[in-house]
Length: 341
Ligand SMILES: NC(=O)c1ccc[n+]([C@@H]2O[C@H](COP(=O)([O-])OP(=O)(O)OC[C@H]3O[C@@H](n4cnc5c(N)ncnc54)[C@H](OP(=O)(O)O)[C@@H]3O)[C@@H](O)[C@H]2O)c1
Image (cartoon, rainbow, N blue to C red):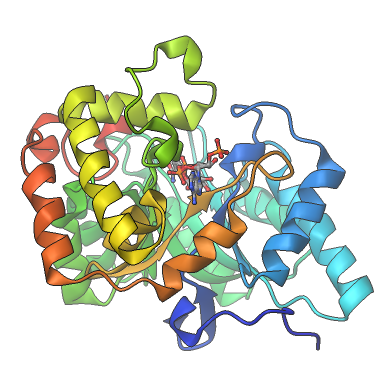
C-alpha cells in the first residue's frame, strides 16, 4: 500500500471510532455542487489526488452535492489502479425529502450512494431531517441501523440535529458517532447545549463554516462590506448572513484585526487561527474545510494548522471580541435550527 508522499504529523489524526482514523481536517465537497461555480470533473479528481498526497485523506460529501459522490468513486478507482491503495475515508450524507421513509426508500438511497462511491460499505452516513414534527426520522434511523448491521454502512452519524433530538435518538438505542454542525468563531451555538451533551455521551462534532466560506481570511481584512453580488459562492452568502446576525461588518473587521495580530505572532494565516480555535474545543473531532476542487486550493496553508499552538493570551484576545457579538443561540436556536424556519 502506498502512503501519502508527505506524511502529516500524528496530531492531524483522530480515532473517530476504534476502527476508523480520520484526518482532523476533512475536505468539504459542497463546492462541487454547482452552487459555488462550475467545476471540471478531471481537474476535480486531480485536486483530490493533490489533497490526498498532502495528507488530506478524509472527505465530506453528500448525496445532493451534485457529482461529489461520483467524483469520490472515480478518485477511488484511479487511486486503486495507480497506487494500489484506497486509504481514504469518505463521509456522505442522506438528506431525504420530507415524506415516508420505508425500508425500501432508505435502502434505495444508501445503495445509490454505495454504487456512486464504488464501495460495499459507506464509512460514515450522516443523516439530515427537515421537520421534527414528523417523527419519521426515528423509523429512518432504525432502517439505517438495519443496513449498518448488514455492513452497507460502517458508522451512523447525524447532521444539523439539535441537542433535544440527538437525545431522543440516543435514548432510543441508536448509536450515533458524530453530529455535523456549523461552528466557528462567529457561530458558537454548539457550546450552549450540544458540546456538553456530546462530551457526556461520547459523541463527537464535525464542524463546517469554520472559515465562514473564506470570509475569515486576509482577503476581507480592511475591506468594505461586500454586497450580495460580490459574494460569489453559496458559502460566502450563507456565512455573511451569519456575520450580520452576530454583529455586522464593523465588529467582524475588529475580529479580523485581532486574528491578524495572532496570526502574525505565530507566522500563520487568519484561516489557520480560525480553524485551530475550533479544532481545540471540546468534542470537536474535525473541522471540515470546503474546497473548490480544481479552481482554488489552500493545501499548503491548511497543513500549517497542525503546527499551530494557540496560547491562553490568544484565546482571551479572541473571546474579548467574539463576546461582543449577539447571542446566536437566543436569536436562531440550537444547532441546525436555521434549516427549520
Ligand atoms: N451539513 C451541512 O448542512 C453543511 C453545510 C455547509 C457545509 N457543509 C460541509 O462543510 C464543508 C465546509 O463548509 P463551507 O464550504 O460551507 O465553509 P468553509 O469551509 O468555511 O469555506 C470554504 C471556503 O473557504 C475558503 N478557504 C478554505 N481554506 C482557506 C484558507 N486556508 N485561507 C483562505 N480561505 C480558505 C475557500 O474559498 P475559495 O474557494 O474562495 O478560495 C473555500 O471554498 C462543505 O464543503 C460541506 O462538505 C455541510
